[in-house]
Length: 450
View 1 (cartoon, one colour):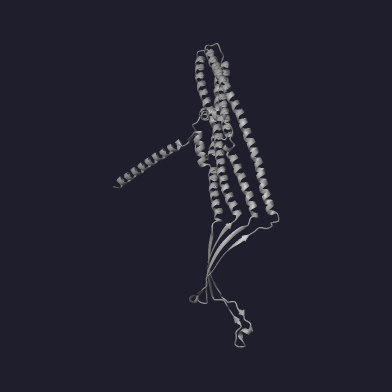
View 2 (cartoon, one colour):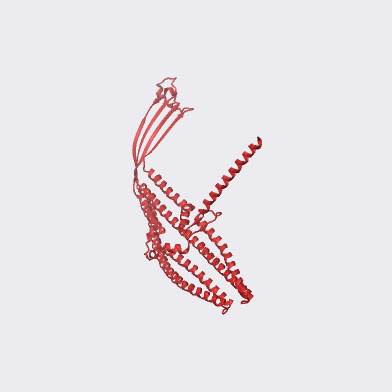
């Protein structure tokens, strides 16, 4: 009986292990699918996971709370107090002797305090007019606008950081594919040369040259693998992606080049499309409000209040008597002279606006300069890539012709080796040219604020 129970238990354990294993494999499969990113997906991931983005969102919420805090100053304030003063020793008042009217037993020491003095007070007050409050509320709203613009600035920086980290990793990946293809083709040539050597048509030197080329290509491939690892780590850091998890790129340079139409790059610059420019405009509005806030010290302020007090007095709690009171009023504060301090504060606020306006002009010039340079770099990269495509076609033609001559016995392996190196260089130049054009396109797009 025990054997059957043990067998049944072992079967349940094996079944649980099988189900768990399948579950782990399924989850791992899902995770593997999530490790592939296009450039757009990488940017989207960063916008959801970067701590800088999360912090910028929190600043917007902080600005909302600041508006609520400032607005509360203008809402009627109601406070209530309650207390019981119990006199452990009553204060004594000494009456004049005339109060005794000649009575020798007259006690001049009396106390007007009761043992219990219980009071409850409710006070309501509100600002009737306060220019500083109005400007403070306006400043809080402008600060929220500033926080929203700052969030857009952080988003744009995140997009740029991810893009700038994605492109080098992509370039290395495409260089790897080119070298791997060249190694494959060279291995075919190595096999063909080996057959020719066995037939006595070529020398060992010809095989050695091919082996040397294969070894050099393998070294380049190994170095690229290490460089790619570092580039991917930089991309993970920019995305906010776990550094201990693998990642794969799905885009090609051609995909990204096609996603940025040339027509877009012909548009004129719009300063307002740059979050950094909108940020300086928001700061300018904030400083202009600050001028009004400082000038508000010249204005009077008016506060109103209502107070209602309930009071019970008596030596014993059962003998308390009730004496309510109520008062209402207002208080007008009129600034007369502040020793020119207010005037100095106003002037400082105005000077900050002037300095900020100078900074705004410099930013406009800087953005225009970036666009001009980016257009020149784009035209240069476009022209270079066109020429490099022609060079690749020529290098491919020379390489194919040299191989045919070599197989027919009218060419040398040295010529094949030289043509092969020229072809490899032309292929790498195409990759570099596409990368330069892609960088130029993205730089121009960013300079235009797109």
